[in-house]
Length: 176
Image (cartoon, rainbow, N blue to C red; front, top):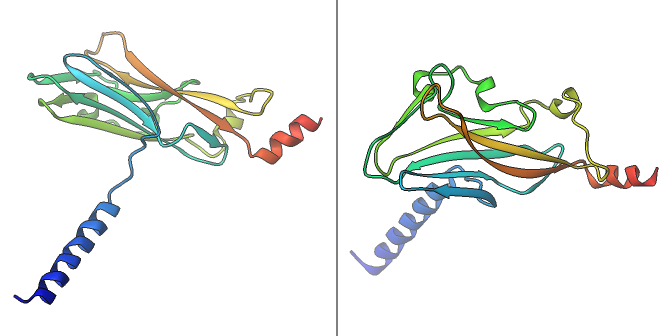
């Protein structure tokens, strides 16, 4: 094989690898909280810290088994993992729960992630009569919930984001 063919082959492989990497879903990483112990690592992330009211918040909630044992999380008739906001709306509200969502079994090194786009509807803030602060913003708490056994207390681990109207609305609010 001559040098020209080798160069073209390498360029083609780089192009294929770059395209494949670009096709993967982007995971939020700017605003994360993590916790870990001898059994598992928990991570809840959003793609930003600050959003405008017309933007969607992308939340990823991941549990990773860092132990040498199989881990089981069992929500009974509820999801084993869920994401809920400050006002009680949850990821599971819009899901037809499957047995795989109510009971999660993780082999050593295995991870499980659920993703939620918040707010759950375009009019969610108005429908719930969520009142912005004087600056016009709303602080949203998003909690990842985990159930080890059906009757156990839910363990939650949260993250907050700031949700603002567009800046022209804030300026108008201060003008009056």
